[in-house]
Amino acid sequence: MPQINLLPWREQERKRRQHDFMIALAAAFVAAAIVVSLAWFVFVQMIEAQRDRNHRLQAEIATLERSITEIDGLERQKERLLARMEIIEELQRSRPEVVHLFEEITRQVPEGVYLNRMTQQGDTIELKGIAQSSTRVSALMRRADESVWLTDPTVTKVETTESGSARQAEFVVTLKQTSPEEYKEQGL
Image (tube, rainbow, N blue to C red; front, side, top):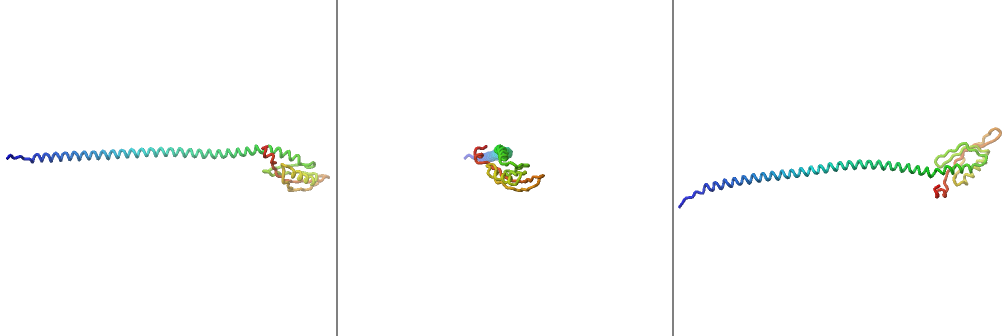
């Protein structure tokens, strides 16, 4: 029988398998390195994209905060302007009242009563003057009480003084200024 030596063939097959294994191992290592590198690259890109979005959001937030501050300033300015407009409208509405007040006072002051001074604070009017007698001051108060523009007459002071041969009464009267209902309804 012929003798066949299979040992070199087995040795070659083992070396070839070992060589194929090393190549497969190297290929697996290279593939694993590529996958890890690729994953690392993808994650780095995702992190950078998120950082860019965060920076953009922070910039937008800062812009919106500046806008909000500006809007708050505009709202305060608007409130101040509205308050000024209300004051101006109130002055416009009360402007004719001064004319009515002076006209009413000239109508209500009886003969023999002379006014030296007239002051107004809010709706309170203070009249200082001289009358020929204290009855003339009473007449002034009665007339003021009947007026539609003047109410609540109160005598603060009446003092009788001598001026030469004549006697006169120095007085201080306070009144309240009102607006008649017809006046308010018509907006006059």
